[in-house]
Image (cartoon, rainbow, N blue to C red):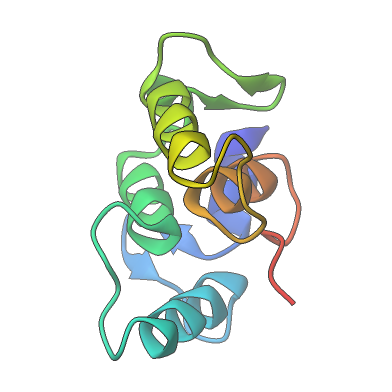
Length: 107
């Protein structure tokens, strides 16, 4: 289900779908970072998964984050950088939320 959720959000093998949650996230992220979408951020992570057509190899699954995965590594680094917690709107929470069918924790 998480693969379909990523596609439904607008992250596809053809790129980001105009007018989608993906395009909104990309726009917000680009504005916040001064005009570009940073590598390793939510938009680039989700688009990579959409282009490949799978979320499971990254460790973002419908049942949570897989131990020992890229997702687990990202979550650990993000938590360390933020004093032990994973911030709302960060890469881990946004990608996991969308993979589960949510809106990515964006306001």
